[in-house]
Length: 104
Image (cartoon, rainbow, N blue to C red; front, side, top):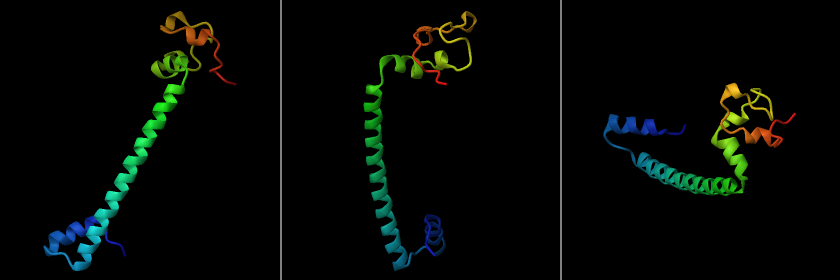
């Protein structure tokens, strides 16, 4: 069976002394976790970079309509091309332009 971090902590508190095997395991555990953290940070950095690049590729109207205010893209409310005046659609143009958002 494998030790878990909690097992180690409890054995530390219980015996006030780690066996050599526990010490070795603890070092390995810390090293492994450290390496994993580095890897995660690295991947996270790459992911952020990719997201940033992807965002810069998105056309302006998509960013203004789709992301900024979900209002004008809310499905099934009002008619495409004719925003309901009762519904305070601040940005009518994104439906009026007929930009095939509402597929099918």
